[in-house]
Length: 213
Image (cartoon, rainbow, N blue to C red; front, side, top):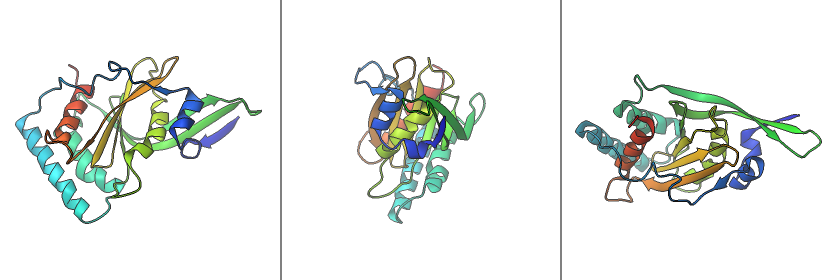
């Protein structure tokens, strides 16, 4: 038996596929939760979102934005504005994850473990924040490790959702573990790419995934 850090063992989507037999599905009805119709937002929520968008762009003008700064100026205020920090909702952070993987080596079983800097809502929605940079690293590079951590869901027969963001880009993930694990992605929402205001769409999707209908 060997123990390996997730950050070292999983660096690409091929690694995720090979170790967990996870495949991406293009089935339109697999991840319908991010699509319309979506819940309405109150005037107060809409006002807060407009403020957060202008705030992020102000910080972006100054240069690269660290992961911690994105948490403070965007993610935490967004969750608070939607009422997701208060009862009946529950948030947990920095979750320790350990996953056992059967391998074909002489060592037999491999254990992947690590601590994920993520906010977990209601045990089925993972919010992962990555460094915000003008070039180079993007949120898709965080996808392999995010999927790996989501594989540790305590309820493998229930869907688990993820949101990866750097404050400017927002990508939702749906994963269903089960016997034949599958995942699907939403569109990549960015702050300035859609006249319909993508941060509003992100907030509506969050509400739909967390708030009981």
